[in-house]
Length: 563
Image (cartoon, rainbow, N blue to C red):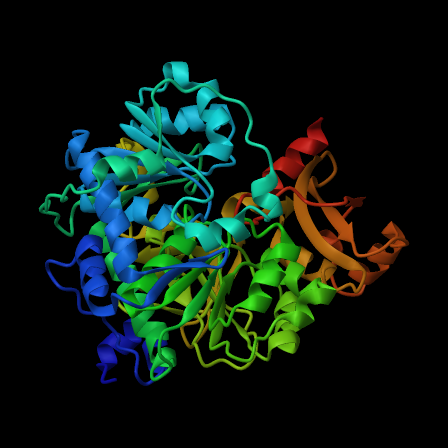
């Protein structure tokens, strides 16, 4: 890779790229998610695209199902730019619904199916989708607020949809599907299977879609405040897919079609881009895991399947590595494993390396950046403790509290600029303006240090910073120390108001076994942490509250202290 001295001075990380990774990606002026999918469908037609409960859909079958969704939406009057919501986990129907909406020129609104009725109401009211596809297991949530949701139609997806006879048989012995569907009444609902039958024989109309058109409204807490819809354009997502292919694609050279374990939910941008869109771009298949919290069934699925890529987050890697039955799983075909979404702890990375022989390639990004900004080199042999280098065509600037670039080695807020950065927040111009610097960088709200070679080392979230007697305490650092203790399974650290020091450190700990005491932890931490970083209290819990993706909810822990 030939890079000018001037560019290297601005982006020192380029000197440390793998030799076959370009400094910049080239983007076609007419490439959209729909066009990218069309090309993959033509190129990989008979290859498996999706696997779920023993059933498979190839690229052509996936495309045919997506066409039916497109045709039905167009028959129902969907116009370009109209929003359509999806509220479902990783069932087989999710990808064709997603593709069908995009092909019709619609905008996908991803909704967490675990949302309460109140949370659903807020998001639907903000995004104003015309239609909602929802897995019937969660339809009662919709029904509870249906009276003031301005939805023209609700489409009920069954767990067995598109699985076929073999898939349905396996599906219904799953503990997850045996869970009863709560009773509900929705007057404007139809079954997804009825939608497919109604659209049979109808041809979808081609819709002119441009790279600058809105593709997805991805709701996020953003850097501050309540949930906002990050407006991700077709070109944002296409760019991040191409950046990912430039970075990881050489590892797949000569391997043939790959299977990626897709356990993280597709309604979260990490899995949507890093799993679904990446695999569709390179001609691989997604092994869809509907309920990764059912660890026994998850491990049985892994035992039955040859897979090549594993995408996870710290909590998922941790719980899998701790399971005695994980030795049933064959990791010999794995090419690489990646992690994002939250800080990867060194103790977890070591356990996974010992289990699989593969280092976890940690990356970093946000919903607002489609999501990936940085990643470790794919050829690392050991955990690095950083989130690696900025992706091709990506600029990272570490800014101090005055908004000025911080010197190498000094911490500051990560600010990012690149083709994967969102167009702004939906219907929130002031929030968009507040999230951007004057020179066009997106302010992430995360604190990091840039090393001399351009690697980025995350310190913590700005909003989670604890200030003890004027000293900064970053929860990630204390948590990493705690989980090094052999009898600690998980830990989370928060700040609590203190009359003496302003704030004090409180640690929530999930023990591995009975017998762990506060004094054990106090002694362990005293040897590893300076005084102001020491937890003043250790609170033992059976489990920690987590998001649907597995991130620990420090906010919930703070609230529990005030009750």
